[in-house]
Every structure is written in C-alpha cells, then in structure tokens.
Length: 392
Length: 218
Image (cartoon, rainbow over all chains, first blue to last red):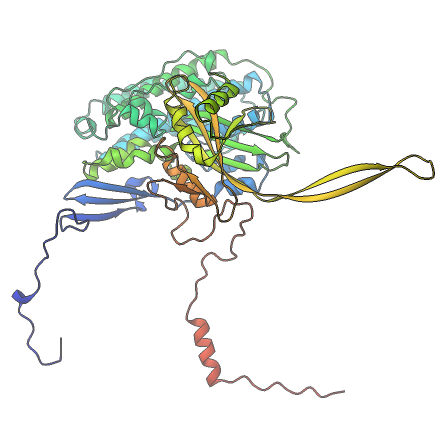
C-alpha cells in the first residue's frame, strides 16, 4: 500500500472480526496453548497442547517423546546385566526400586533364587526409595501450587541423608546400579545398617513437622480439594496404578497381590483414598510414607546374616533358557513391570518396560477438563511423572 | 483362577469360529499364553473382561514383538542299503524352508476385582509388510491407548478402531519403525537438504574445473 499514492484505508473499512459459530474449533474465545516442553511445571520435557475457553481447559492432549532414546532397543543390543545401569536412568529418582524390578524379571526368567539377606536389603532400599520419592513429590506439588519452595527444601534435606546412604552402599547417589541377578552387589555393613536405622527412626519426626506445615495449609486445602477427581471404574479401566489408583479407592498394591520379595513377611497396611482428588493423592503419599517407615523398622529388626549373592548366580556368560517372563513390582509411582523374552542368547530378544507414569497419564485430560491451567499444573504434579520413564 | 486350558475350552465353546491356541512358554516362568485370531480378537477380549469368573478388568501391559522371517533347515536321514552287502549308508538330505514372520501384540491381563492373573493374550498379524492390521483393544481397556500408539510407532502394527492412532514417541513424519529387528538407523538423523549443494553446482559454471594434465606415456 505504501508508495502507490493512494490514501491509507480508513480504520472503519477494515473487516471486523468475523462471527463464527460456537462449534467452530477456532472460535474467537478458544485459545490453543502449547504448554512445555520446557516448562518448570511439567517436571521435565513434557508437552501439553491445551485448548482453553477463557481460563478453563476444554481439551488437553499430552505430547511425548522429547526424552525418547529407545531404551528398549539399547537393552536388546546388550547383555542382560549390561542394561542394569540403564534401568537407573528410567526413573532417575528411584533407581534402587527400578533395579529391583529388572532383577526380579530376569530372576523369574532364569529361575534364579535370591538369598534371604538380599531380599531384606532390597525391601529396605525399595522402601527408602519410596520415602525419598514421596517426600520430594509432595515438595514439588507445593512448588506447583505456588506456595513456596520451602517444603521442597525440607524434603531435599531428608533426601540427602538417604542419598548419602545410597552412595555409601553403591558408590553413587542416584545411579545406583546396585541389584544383581541373584542378590545385591555389595553387602551392607553393620555400621551402614545402624546408620540407616537411625535415619529411619528419625523420619516420623520429619513427617510430623512436614504435615504440621502442609496438611492443614489453607492454600493447600483451597487448591486441591475436589480438583482433578478420578473415578475408580474409570481408573481401573485405564490401567492407573500406584498411589493415584489407591487415592481413588482402588485397593490394589502389587506388594500385597503378588507378594514378591519378602513383603508377605511384613506387617503393613495399604492406605486408600475416598474422593480421588488431588488432596487425597497428597494425603495418601503421606500415609504411605508412614507405612514404609513401619516396614523399614521391621526389616532392620529382622534382617538375617548370610550371603548377599546366591552362590549359584552367574554373572558372566549369563544366558537364560528360551522363554519369557513378566516381572512387576509396586514402584513408588505405580506398577513397574519388565517383560522379557529370551531366545537363549546373551541378549534379551525382547525387553519391554511397562512404565507406570506413562499409563497414569492416560486420564490426564479427563482429570483436567473444566479446571483452570493453574489446576492442571497441580493435577500433573499429583500424578507424579518422571520423563525418563515416560519417554524411555 | 481356572487354568488356561479351561479358559481356552470355554472360549472355543463360546466362539466356535474363533481359533484359540495355547502358546507354551518353555522357560522357567512357564507363563503360557493364549493366541487368538485377529478377527475375533476384540470379541474374545470383551468376553475375558466381562466374564464373571475371569473379570480381567485390568490390562497391565501391552507390547509388540517382532518375529522376522526365519529360514529353517530340516534334515532328513535316509538309510541306503549297500549293494555290496556292507552296512547301509546314511544319507542326510537338507531342505530349507522359509517360515514367514509376523508382528505380535502381547497383552498382560489381570483382575483387580478377583486379584488374579496374568492371562496373556497374543494377537498376530498375517505378515510383516502389508497386512499388519490388528483390532485395537483400546475400546475395551483404555490402558492400551498409549501403549498401542507406542506399538504402532515402534513396530508398525496398525490398530483398527483405535480412537487416536498417531506416533507416540517418534516425531510425525518419521518413516520407519525402529523396534523392528531389521531396522537400520540412519547415519545422520539431522541431515536435511541445504542449498549448499546447488550453490556449489552453480559455482562450477564460473570456475570450470582445470583440464586434467596429460600424463606422458612412458
């Protein structure tokens, strides 16, 4: 227009906003927002394509794959033991229990026995991992709520103690690579067990302090009660597991159902939620931590002396017989399963991780519909995802 | 829970046209599985979910397995009598045949209500190239939603009746299926055509290559 000599068009002659029908997906009131992949509230590289009507979510599509490195293919091209360190990188907050899930599946595939002491050590480490995961999750949840960073720092203070224990035992704070097929890599010394016992003894005091600060918190109550409700039948059909399912009232804990490891020897209860909202998911984790402390106390009391590795276990030249096995554990985030097919070679023919966090996201859209963006952040925080495991 | 043979017999009685086989697992775990033909896959899955004695309401794991074409060598030994009266001579004849491969979808089913399981359900495609369609079980268990998308993405099984069959982990526009056994990954994932090659081509017009020096013949 500029430079051809004609006068600029008057403002009134501009075509006004066209009136579209409400059913039009690009109705003027609707806004499509891409949240992520680099967004602090998504806990990693996770993206949600959200359609908003004002501030309310009317559609939400999760987008995955930003951290995909085809873990399964890598594991199929290496030996059974070779992919043990890679399992640390799945759920990098809970490497001890992820190691166990993989070791459990391989032991099931190869018919490998595990000595009693190793079973106790596994229970101890898995429950410590649960304490670490749940306390940090609650911290992150409050961070997502926008209250402050303080609860997270309280949780990290406690987490450091456990990470020091993991480091003393396995040499690494987070990437532990500790379990082996038929036992554990290092035998914990009596000093380590005593130190661990004391930290666990002091843990309920931290939990009380944590709960004083958080449970009755007004922001917490206002922002989480009745938010992101999930019905039980829907949750079961969508394969939701772990604390998210139990918060909706589904009594399903693989520790009780399968009784893997030595869990049947321990006396603990499975807390259940009633409403299935974000608040229940928070409260359930607090209750689960208290049960974990109970399990740990029993484990420190009962742990026997003995070998940490089965003497018949083969570390080198490990070739399970042809066949397949599916091993699963109750990870801190839900049911973590490993499906393995062996063709008799040193590498698994098929190696599959059943990621609890990916499947728990199935109903994210249903949970978020009708809530605001700020609530979606909290709902996502209460599902507890780790992108290392979602994308694999 | 009733045994797998009982489940198979009940399925055969209920779906007379369906093919239901037991795939034995030779390993230590001995978790045998049910192989079901694709045409009846969804009806059988619905039966397994809604039957009151089984109530397999929870599909824990859905995954794909690739079985490439396999060459199998059969050897037949025949004894040929020696006309000279000695011991019969044994001749070994080897024949090779091609066992066609397939793609397989494996579902691990549990019951949350009755707390039993797993029942392992397998569906196989006709081949690995052009007939890779299986019925989607997402309408029956919602938990298969992302997992079937992942199988489609990484193995290339097309799930008929899936509400939203898109790639899950690889990006849109990616051509191959990386979990297949014969997948060859590209040397450079990030290569894309640039104008650089064309610029070089045009530059040749301005700077024609110097004539090759004639090598004197010895």
